Image (cartoon, rainbow, N blue to C red; front, side, top):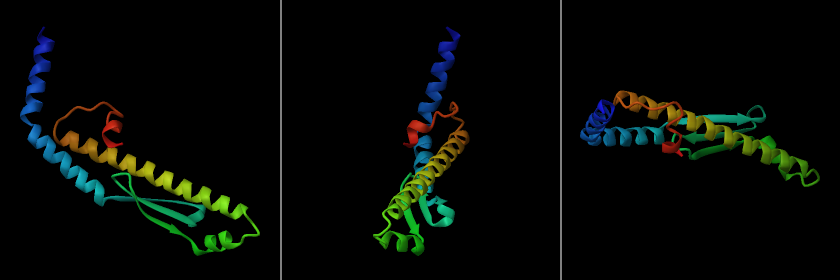
Length: 125
């Protein structure tokens, strides 16, 4: 019975702080749009940049890789380029997801909100 009362008191506290929580989450969302991470494959031949909102905001492909793609005599170069690009993009998005989780966790901690480990995944994606 007392556990239910504690839970209700906690919920009432959260409801009272809802405007503060909403403002903090909006602040975090804005910050995530500004933060970026980079990932590269092929020794830097392909570099992808993602922001904290899990969006690709940049893609750099070394000109030497383009030269290989332009060589129609070797179609394997296209396959290699596609694999490098896919790898760089996926790695950048994974890093961005981790960054977003760290930022959200920090914001939740600032607000005194308890979150289970890994509990932010659904909020980010």
